[in-house]
Image 1 (cartoon, rainbow, N blue to C red):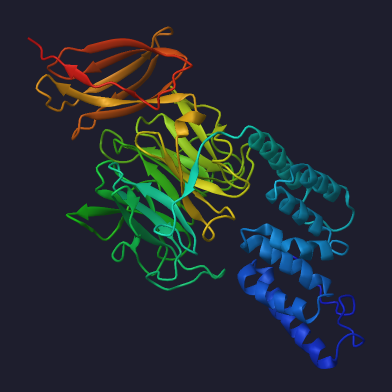
Image 2: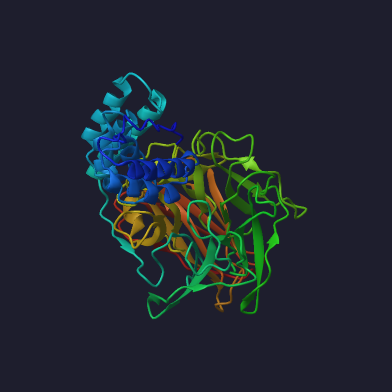
Length: 518
């Protein structure tokens, strides 16, 4: 946020009555230096200088206000900025807006709403217009409602083997759930470079699962990581293709690359030849479908609905990728959407948004594909979502647990990765999974059709994993289905079944044995 320089020293206690000339000169110089960083939103470098000014003379209102803004934008515990806005609110109207944001972070939603409304009533210079303020008022209203109806689920910080004092986020989970890739801005990054805000560039890390625990994460090293930004995005179902985000050559944006696994090593990533990457745009996240034929991704390319939107590309019969398709107004808003994840059945999309009805900055939402349209996104509620940023939601293959990146103030440092337990308690869907074999227990390549029993409408066609014969799909409670399993050279298997609303199991398992044609 840009503010004018207020170097009117007599107004802010820099007169010779309170300080000697040498002190006044020091403060004047520090204000010029701090304001240089501040005008470019470089809060990390501006903050210690404003802090020093306040230590020298706490009556300088400009320094108090701008120190509050710096702390607010860099510290997960926004309450630390409160006293500086209290001191500056008589001279800086925007202090009331920030105080409202802090009250929201303290879950004092009614007080936050009152402060927002008071801010809207003020005359004079206001940085935030009524539309912006109303946007935050709605957040407080939604937060109040969601926290009241808190879901009974456990969220667990994955601890120091995964998380650090630095930002850790963006889980990519192998289909076997034995390897866990994520992105981090740690101080042992390959290039040891920092952005203008004092953050190290991104590198990809990996942890292996042994004896029920995730082992200490290790840097994936070169050739996957480079001196520039490298972030993990998605992984193929067989675990042999790692999709990564990498800053492009002219640093005008970032693109999606693919690294191949050869034996136990990852090859040098190659830029993906598809309409996923666009010039002068940023493609920070994505998700490959289980069959490898559709890639969902977030991009701030021209022609979107605002901020970052979610798009998809699909493989054509020729094997090349289609042009990118915006998922439309049911998913995308004028604000940012990011962190898409498509489930194994291809019909359920998780993503984070700043533009739907949410309680924090980014909230996690879910939408279901109904034939060709995506349903109205549902907020996953509290405590999956919080008053902070909640993003990169990745469910496990059995849809019973999930992983989440969030910058809650109780974390180890900045963004941490958490595990969400028993997520099926908060939804009305049930994972249906199993294996398709023949009578000799040989694995079969089969097609599974799910039909609504009453409407006769096809709900989806799914294929088993060619290597394991396993399948996973999502069904909804309070519905009756017809299931048809087919494989070349075998008799079709047909079963009608109902999922009642009071179904309490975590999943429904159906192992199918097909009989060979006579």
